[in-house]
Length: 309
Ligand code: GLN
Image (cartoon, rainbow, N blue to C red; front, side, top):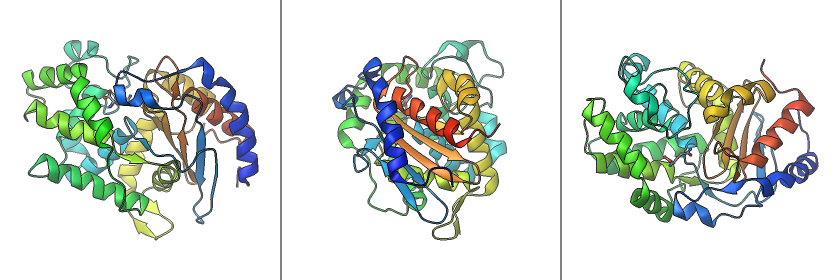
């Protein structure tokens, strides 16, 4: 058991919190700009049902890019990995998450991985269902299973705010459509994607999802296999290679925990075979990762030797 008490976690949060001032809250999605820069919270969920936490743990935040790895799991279950990887690649890019640069030069013509926006839009496009509403509800039901909480929903204000300002993501969609990588109406895909990114939860829920990934798809609390081990393995691998955008290499060296971040300041961690981590700290570094969240993971990883490498 790496960190035994919430008191131990509180001490780490107090240390990590000092760096929130050197980051900045994301405001390119205007509604995210309202977040409190100084917030920092963490929850750790263990397989025996124990959960320790520190900070403003009841606060809910939107998943943003963390939703990409959950959506990938659903689509891998729905369609199988061969089909999915005909449409999106497996390689890190080294570019910012919203970059359009490699789309034009890559061969074969498909986004390099499902964690950059271009690839995530393709994965969202692959969610099965007959309407945007039905596809969104399928994703939400999957999240209800992962968290064991059927009250989780999306934040309308954040979804609308992103939908109205997502010029770059629309550009990525039109590029993908021009090259026959996606077929559907761009506005429909944008509606689904912005709702997906605006799904809201707190760090306790996020840690529980991290735990399912950590335990190869099993929720130890209800004993159910929520996703096949292979799907959990593929998702964790992407979390290592591309989960922290173009900071993934440095993160793997310094911290070594499969993790996925989002521009709302969330980070989901899955320590293989051990436990799940949920973090919320909206002050971001220049690559769009929670600045205090990374500091906190660095302290945890060093103090309790959590690197998988
Ligand atoms: N909704 C955000 C976007 O597409 C998600 C990006 C992120 O969290 N890095 O721009």
